[in-house]
Image (tube, rainbow, N blue to C red; front, side, top):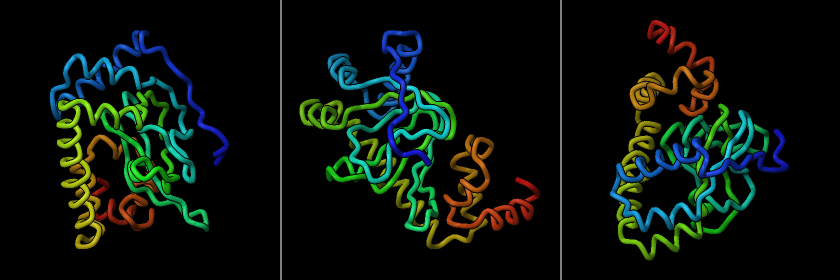
Length: 213
């Protein structure tokens, strides 16, 4: 893997693609809590629209991130590599999701994870320190953040941790299909297996037992 730079191309926010992407971002955020026009305009000022090619990196392991992102189109994986080069997929991010190494951003530390595009993707990057300043000043943004964290980092995280400990591999795979039905056809089998904590061979066996599902 070439980790020497972030291979990102900037896109004008005023272009038709830019307008569509920012409209999608506002819609996704407002699904958690309504964002006022004033807050929205200040938020746009700390954002940038970028294009990321397939197999290129949005954020790098071992580097200090400065932003998180919103996926307008495309697909990413968040993964960690060990000293032997083994990779473990923690999460996938498709349209309307928010990839980022949040612990690294909050602590101001280098990221333990990398985020790689699995498809050619278009994302809005959101500058983290600017977002934190707005968060302290804007009540509507604060309420959005609370609702988002509750749903995605508390409820969803707890369910996944319980599944990894208590569920058999087949049950974890069925849960993955139920929660992310749109991703199974977009992901290579080995990426799904890594996410489930099993081998590709085990996943192939499970799929055969389920009739090729």
